[in-house]
Length: 391
Ligand SMILES: Cc1ncc(COP(=O)(O)O)c(C=O)c1O
Image (cartoon, rainbow, N blue to C red):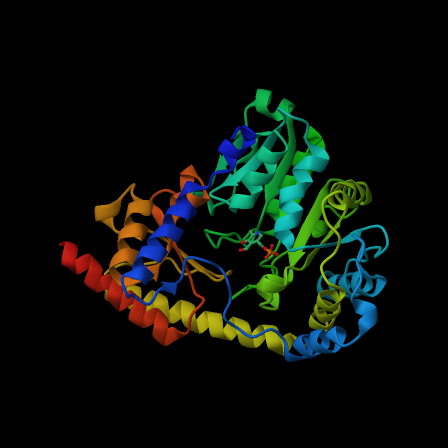
């Protein structure tokens, strides 16, 4: 069958290789401990679940919900955002519900790029950022992130000829996979850069609440105070552990919100209204819920780092996100996929190979801390046995 050429560019071989390896591990009788996906094991807020159950019994919730969602949902997002960041946004013109922040990053290139235009993407970065640009026929200029620069991109090093054709910059901090954080000063620099070069700035912000230590992660609109160049994507998947519910929202420049909703209206309606109602309730959850989850993830981070140190595999301590991002063991240098495939086949422990997040991710692996401390420690012992057997 003759299929579209763009499919070639969408193939994410690394993650399909890992899926196949997990399948082989299961078929060989191993229990797979999947630390390769950032899918939280914590329960969503009980009041949100109760609301979803109540909505199911309300027959008025069963019909189509158009792409703008409900007024109450958008108002709840605006209220939540004001309480967090002290910035007022208009729920009628500056907010759009999304089927997860992934929908936002995948569709925004269709709204702002013409074929051949460049998007400036973090490398390593979240895979759907790349996919969206390919769907829009765009070109990618990867911004290689380096540990010695705190995994922040060097915007001034982008060649002039690329800048002239660039329409989009996607940032995302706290960052998946490196767990790096950005300051408001860096955002101010990025906003100024985008203003100077006529570039749309997307800030993918699903880890807005996932700060384990230190100050609250800044919003891009603390820098783009007049909402001139930016759009920001929020998610319920991480803050409220509702990844399977597929719900998020965008806040941003009115023109960008309108352009994105024009694209979205051709592809999707909103998710089921009961999910929006549940998400609205989640937004009013007491801060204690988030603090408790962060305490759990801090404990997991510390246990996993201690267990890794004991087996002679030191890992940097992240201040945010649910991930450890650490160099692959020396014997597997430059072979992160081979390492992760061999590891899951031998032990059932699945990690994410760094190269799955871009060329600059090679040489690293990512642990998602989505199991309890005991399981993490047992998994690291299995990794130790695997490494020792190869010595
Ligand atoms: C940077 C980033 N963006 C988007 C997503 C997906 O978020 P959502 O579930 O809201 O689509 C993730 C999930 O891991 C992520 O790490």
